Amino acid sequence: MTNANGRGRLIYGCMGLGGPWDGTSYGSSEIDEAAAVIEAAQGIGIELFDHADIYRSGKSEAVFGEVLARSQGLREKILLQTKCGIRLGERGLQTHYDLSREAILERVNQSLKRLQTEYVDVLLLHRPDPLMDPREVADAVGQLMAEGKVRQLGVSNMSGAQIAYLQEELETPLVVNQLEMSLLRRDWLESTVLVNHTEGLEYSFPHGTLEHCMATGIELQAYGSLAQGRYTGASSAEFSPAESATAQMLEQLAGEKNTTPESVLLGWLMKHPARISPVIGTTNTGRIQACADAASVADHMTRAQWYGLWVAARGNNIP
Ligand SMILES: NC(=O)c1ccc[n+]([C@@H]2O[C@H](COP(=O)([O-])OP(=O)(O)OC[C@H]3O[C@@H](n4cnc5c(N)ncnc54)[C@H](OP(=O)(O)O)[C@@H]3O)[C@@H](O)[C@H]2O)c1
Image (cartoon, protein in one colour):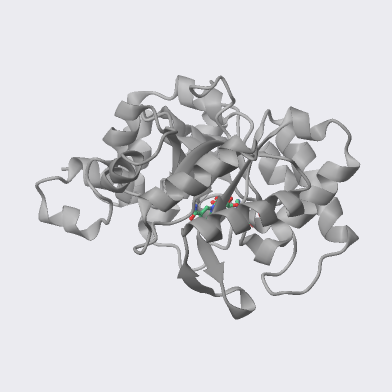
């Protein structure tokens, strides 16, 4: 099961690589961990690796760059995506957003240096910057593309309306919108069926965002897609009844399908016609391997199974 570019749909999210978020330096163990993770991700067919300039205060990109430098031919076998637009303050805390022309140019050049590569395949604007001037974004991105440093552009955490507004000024099409989407974080889904229900007010997801992306061919990438292990082995302390029921159902379906709960969890997301690409962020190589069957689970999941998981996760019936 591939995306519109023919790429496998699972993406590896590199936010967990590089050690602590503070300014401490990394060592050989962090580089070795990155190498093992990249190998495990490639082992299940992953081609695209997702970064951001801020992850682990730059160290996620840096350890990845060290692996690229020591692995001849690896860069040509993979696709790299990074993000810019958030400024980190002390101890890794966010201070402000910055999508000014200068900031985009400076941050992308720094990312390329850390990643030890000449180009990234996709650059994402990490979050909407209320002070952003779309003409400045167009100017900076146009320059980076002309220099061969960025091949495609996308966004993250943006609504359909924000994307459409930005696109008006851009010469290049926006190709990605990365959002938090999972069976646990279901605002993206609940909002589509609770349009005229007061219960819908509980969910914060701008109406029309999925539809805008689907209609314009923008790939939807889901971060937090493994729900941080909430249903698949992370601490079960203080589980709600809905969480316990969902974890049990994932386990049961995994048994029936001769696969893992992780693959069922991701397969559920991938069955949606928006052709969502899950970004998985575990640094545990066994858990990466447990995601291998996600696409085939999606292909074979019945409508009853898909709705059954959704109802279990929401803890009550759909309207
Ligand atoms: N665009 C954005 O604003 C944005 C925001 C957040 C993330 N992202 C991207 O999305 C990627 C994934 O996000 P995420 O890491 O929050 O989501 P995730 O894949 O749902 O969760 C992975 C995290 O949960 C932990 N975890 C604990 N037990 C687990 C289990 N049993 N199964 C799976 N994970 C378990 C992992 O730790 P271990 O490593 O120990 O397994 C890891 O820290 C990130 O790496 C990043 O690339 C983007």
